[in-house]
Length: 256
Image 1 (tube, rainbow, N blue to C red):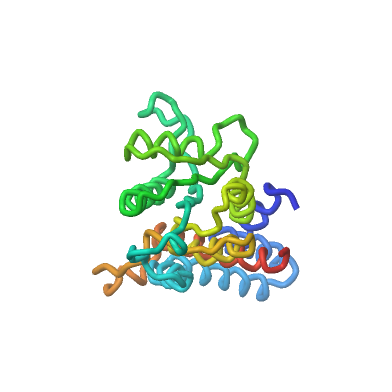
Image 2: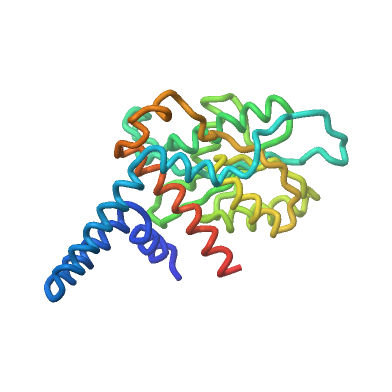
């Protein structure tokens, strides 16, 4: 299955694509069976409302956070990781405020910020992983990330893995890069909700992983108010991110 096709399928199975798909089906069914079609449309609207509630999105993301925040303690030379592997988080193409240059997305910047902190705490070198998701002539995510890491945090990455397009490829190509150096223990930096899948794939490739998650779903005042149950774009986005992660785990389980 091509990457583009898999992304189209995922878009149709995740909110809001799922509700829109059901509404189209409901509209077609109504031509012959009005009540059945109307029921499908009402169900689609209900799904859209539920997935748009901030409490739904945050609850789904929290359910993915299987690893606690890292506490950096003393390690022996036998147990200390040999690299901090940072997974790509997307990029911001042709940013006008950066003179039209490609730079990192907000999600990628969150990961880089924590990786820079971890590097300063431990002195362990950084490997940036991420290529071009689509062959559109843009720079690989890891190349853009390496530039941002240096310019914004004054940290130089030691390795740049620029071929991977998925979490599975992040793990495989990072292994190819670090294996000749005898490095099999790593800190893995990614979002807390993505760490479950990341650890699984890197361990399958022979790494001994110390999770270093960032950006946990914490509770704020709005989570205890009526606002948590009112539909919002933020709630819908959180549900879509969580749904994408669960769908990815299912797909990886079926294709391992």
